Image 1 (cartoon, one colour):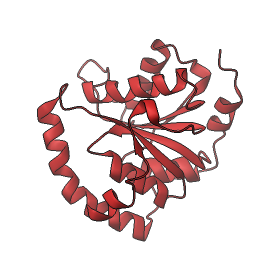
Image 2 (cartoon, helix red, strand yellow):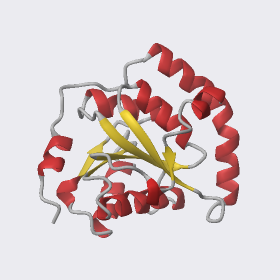
Image 3 (cartoon, helix red, strand yellow):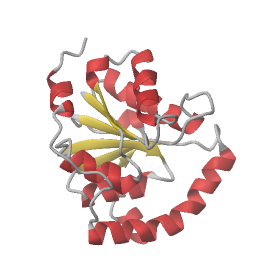
Image 4 (cartoon, one colour):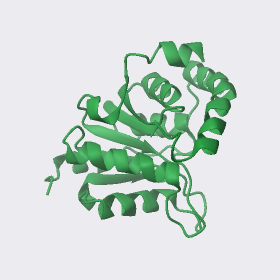
Length: 197
């Protein structure tokens, strides 16, 4: 916990103050039974859409779990952002973001992301920024303060960060390969080159 918090203290921002980066990486946070984003995930996506509309980022990489046909977190995230006015060409999906480390590692290794804003809840942000940096991405973070919207889930999230920080330290040190690797994908490059409107 000391490592993830101290090493990222100068790189965590409220959305209105986050510096410009080419890409926002939005980390998954679950779907409802009807296939729509949970409250916490929707709040992350709202922040990402706001960063795009304010031109603080220029493309969005949504990273989530699509491990079986009935659960497609990534497509639900893309649909939400498009409904929020982000052009479809500006949203890229990573269907194998099974953990924070895998999302960060795949963003760098598969999608070629070199600089990004990672978007998540405040309790998760120090770990997310630290892991994306360990993966080789120049990373800042935009936080959702979720206490008012989901106090119980937020409290659980804070508690969960203690054991998760140990795993994060191991991931940053050992740098394990993601579950799925593959050839370089050009989706982020194409999204950055696409017109904003």
